Length: 116
Picture (cartoon, rainbow, N blue to C red):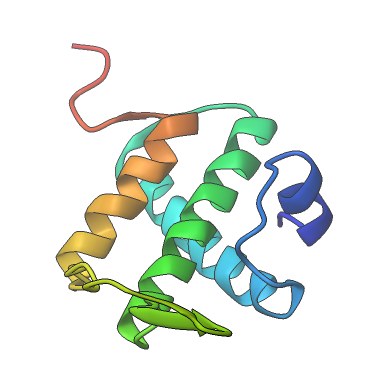
């Protein structure tokens, strides 16, 4: 399992807090293991760890979006700023597509017959 130190130093992640990382990386690892069961997935342990970190980041952003995490207005002193929050698709289909994309950045995932 990927640890938080790897996430911060090797992956250079800075979005996920230490308290949330274990939970999100476990979910990401489980999804990658699912891909390994149904597809042919190639990559060394370093690539697997990077894929888990990327997937954990995506899960974090989906959770933040689902919980209203996008800031639409802010003010500091007399200066204020506001913007329209982007519409983010947090459906299961969208999440699955993004997790697959994140895993594919670091791992070779073959969905076809492979050795035809």
